[in-house]
Image 1 (cartoon, helix red, strand yellow):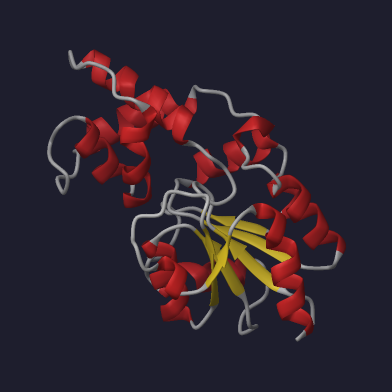
Image 2 (cartoon, one colour; image 1 turned 180 degrees about the vertical axis):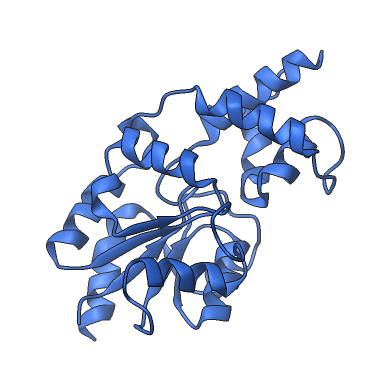
Length: 218
């Protein structure tokens, strides 16, 4: 049976922080606010767009932006082109190696479907995945395990054991609830201190394919 692997997108496959920061700073500029450095946005990215936009507009750490502000952010963000440079080092090579070994790959992300498909296509890795399920088309988005199961169903892999590669507590919670092996992409936007204890820590994407394939052979 080929290994089945699901991936988060932002902070796992791609470093979207630069584009997200550019879009949010344009939104801030329109509200008369000064720009923030990219580093200030990074820890907010895993929280989802309403919380990310709310914090970026100064509404408070736990205050969600309204639908109009979120839509304005996504419109600006969608106009920013992606490229293979958005991928973390070693990701393209790891995905190619996994596919060559027969692995079945999917993307389970809370990023909206249209933006997810756009990023995957423009970064050149869309062809590696059997299915992509964004947060706005998920029946129940991560951290609910139904999002992972919906992605497996779209891949025609229901009921098969699988691994989930992600960078945040949202991903770890989803993997735990779904009974999946969790691999922590430590190069991403880690939002908790205990992720190394909740799964296999990957120091870089160079270890991604070898870790997954070794586990599949065990």
